[in-house]
Figure 1 (tube, one colour):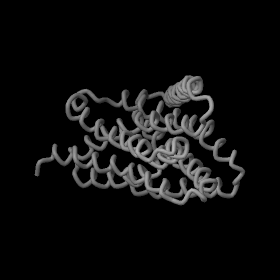
Figure 2 (cartoon, one colour):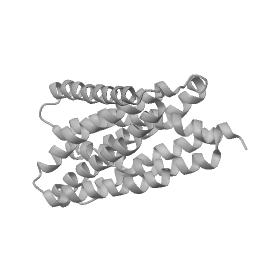
Figure 3 (spheres, helix red, strand yellow):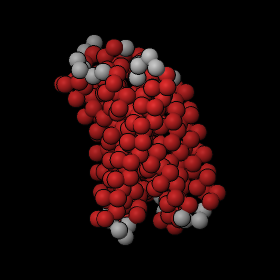
Figure 4 (cartoon, helix red, strand yellow):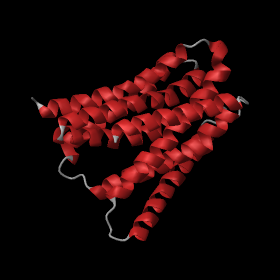
Length: 249
C-alpha cells in the first residue's frame, strides 16, 4: 500500500466534504427568513463546541511546561490573541463592507475555517501515515463536521450576493485548504511540526471561532427575530458536534 498517496487522498476527501454545505442554498427562497437564522446559529453551535471540546483541550495537551497554572495562563492568552485577531479582521472587513453583514460573515467564516482546516489537514496526514485505520476514522469525523462548516460559508455568501457560483467557489476554497495542509505536511512540516506550534494553531483558531460565534453569528441570527429557530439551530449544531467528537475520540 502506498501510504503517502492515501495519506494525501484521505484529507482531500474529508476537506472536500465541506462543499456539501453548499446544497441548502437550493431550498426555496420563501424559507429564507428561517434558513438564514437557523444556519447562522447552527454554525455557531458547531464552532463553539469544536473550540471548547476539541481545539482547546487538544491545545492544552500539546503544552507541556510542567506547571499547570502556567499552562492555563498561556492557553487563555493564546485564545485571547485569536479572539482579538478576529476582532481586528472583523473591523478591517467592516470598513470595506459596511452595508452587507451577511457577506462579511461569509468572508470571516472563510478566513477562520481556512485557519482551522490547514492544521486539520496536517493532523490528518500525519495520523494516516502513522496509523491508516485511525486516519480513516479521523477523516470520517472531520468530514461530518466539515458539512456544517460549509453551510457557515455558503448560506451567508449566497443570500448576500445571490451568486451560486461564488458561494460554491468560496466553500470549495475553504474545504480545499485542508488538502493544502496535508500537502504542506508532506513537503515541509513532517520533520519540523512540534507540539508548541500545534498549541498555538489550535488555541488561536479556537479564539477566532469563539469571537466569530458570539460576536457575529449568534447576534446576526437573533436579528431575524426567530428565537425558536435560532435556538433549534444552535442545539442541533451542538448535538452534531457532540456526535462527531464522540466518534473522533
